Structure formats: C-alpha cells, structure tokens
Image (cartoon, rainbow, N blue to C red; front, side):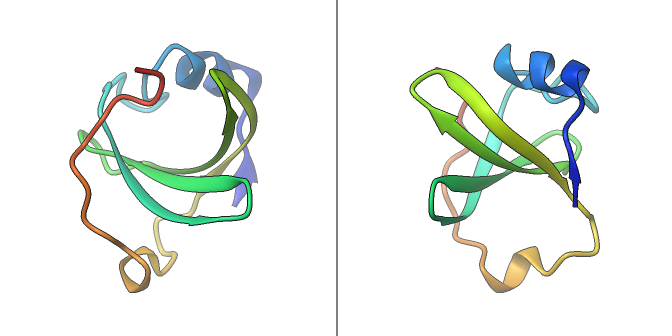
Length: 81
C-alpha cells in the first residue's frame, strides 16, 4: 500500500475515484477507524479513514492484495453522500 497523494485526497473528498472519476464505491472490509472501498467502475481500491465528511487518512491498496478473502457484498454507494 501507498499513501494517497494530495490530488487523490482532493478527488476522493469530492466523491470521485482518482483513477477514473467514478462516483460509486463498494464498501469492503473494515477495521478500527478505517474501511476499504473499491471503485465500481475501475476496481481501484482504497483504505480510508473518514470522520464525518472529512477524509483523514488514505492509502491505495495494491491490486494483488487478498480482498476477496474478506469481501462482503454491499450495494454500491457514494463516499460522501
């Protein structure tokens, strides 16, 4: 994983995927104060800590990580709806 850049933070705060500008995210595993999200459009994955409407921390999850082992099916939703 790597930390998100300032540009990526801005895009995520606006509710857009930094990779494809998609607006729907599939929630994934959560732990502590963070939760994983996957872009429905392109499959980019992020580990985000969101408090209220503020993105405090974020990391980009490598595509080869074992997401499916922890994946739960939820309806896609916007990050900051």
